[in-house]
Length: 138
Image 1 (cartoon, helix red, strand yellow):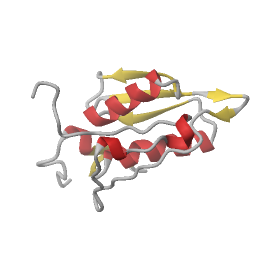
Image 2 (cartoon, one colour):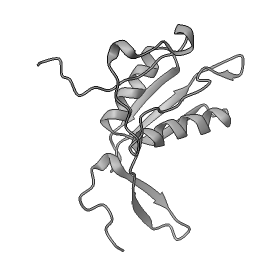
Image 3 (cartoon, rainbow, N blue to C red):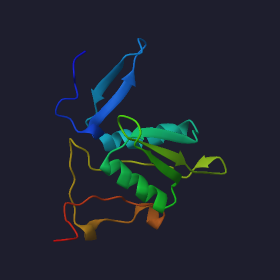
């Protein structure tokens, strides 16, 4: 079997099982889009929880979602070959707390703006998760 993982970060690898029960590793070019899609799909199916491969950016996004009350909880499983995050989704009156989750800046179209130019989401009822290249230590 060809090794497609060469030169890839562990967070960019996806394990897929085929009918032959052989494991295959596939590249993941956009881990943030993968996380958001998994959350949307699990919400549509009213799933209690979902699992996704772990990465630093995914872990930080999940921490923000928990701190802001959009998910019940999360757990990091580092026992497997590729660490996974398990996320328990939150519902109120059988409706998902996360009504809409989108990504503005994408790998093919990066958007940059100043912090003061960021507008409130849903008139302050939603949140924006931003990443920055600035460090606290500088």
